Length: 390
Image (cartoon, rainbow, N blue to C red; front, side, top):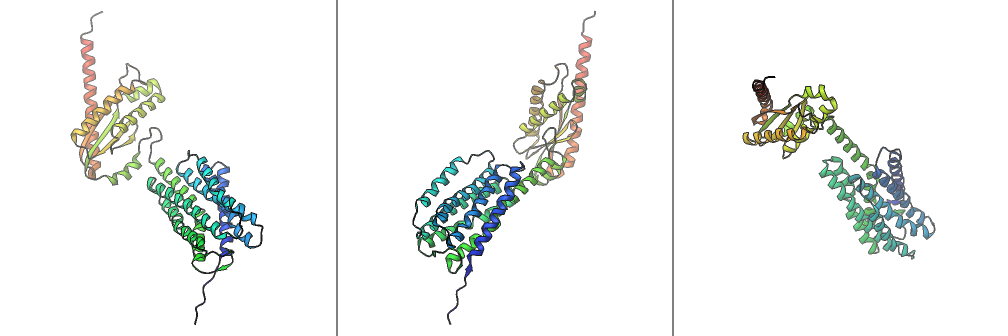
């Protein structure tokens, strides 16, 4: 007994992808128009609206619409895919230009405009499938790069929604050029060509809102980063310390950095100058500890630096560089007769015992501060002793 072939209702699938794409496009354009999202949402939105409109071209053609509908609709489909790719590019690189991309897409539509034979449906479908595969492959590549560069898990979801359609469209192209495409692409169909269309449409249905998920995760990461930063200096805060400490392994150095005469600077010159001094201390410490180190604002005018893998010599060298660079830089905002400096205490050992190292470095910092104060008082006493009598 001959087994009856399974048929797929491609008309319903085309209607579904048309409406889904238009809705996804509108949902992206509205927040772009109100200033909530950047240009990426406009490109992504207009691209999906155009995709939805051009998806109905096959239905209209098979319903007896004039050939000019398909003649214009197919090149517009290329522009739709180009716009979607442009949205992904602008999401990854907000300042990028899409001019060359649009010119290339327009050139890519020329062969379809030059095709005036209504019966050459196989060639049109084959060519259009190749172009779709190229744009989907490019979009998947950008999503893959975003996922790796920004550690966005939803980037892998976007990648998984675009990458599979590349071989599907290429296979669709081969079958079309091989004459396996009917003159009617909608309606009830069976065979491998119909299944290729159905599977590709399934991925297209779900990916219209995928960039929303990517934007949501990026926003969540940005909020998390802001929550771990000191608003004044840009240094990490204690919340970040509690997270980053879980990543430390082996031994290292802990530096406790405190500004000397900071209260006097604030009282005499105002908080704006004091804030500038804190910013200088942060930038200097970050630059010195840049190779694998982290700087945290511990509170007030006190900072903590952690340098994994550093020994005592490296810690002392880093401390000396921070102190010297701060002294050389802070003079731009502090008065000459107010020697604002930093006192630094260091401790080395296993970073798994970072609390103990913090306490040791804190004690060393206060010892350095007392020694500096004693030296200052001794110098002042000597100066007063040798001052000539009036």
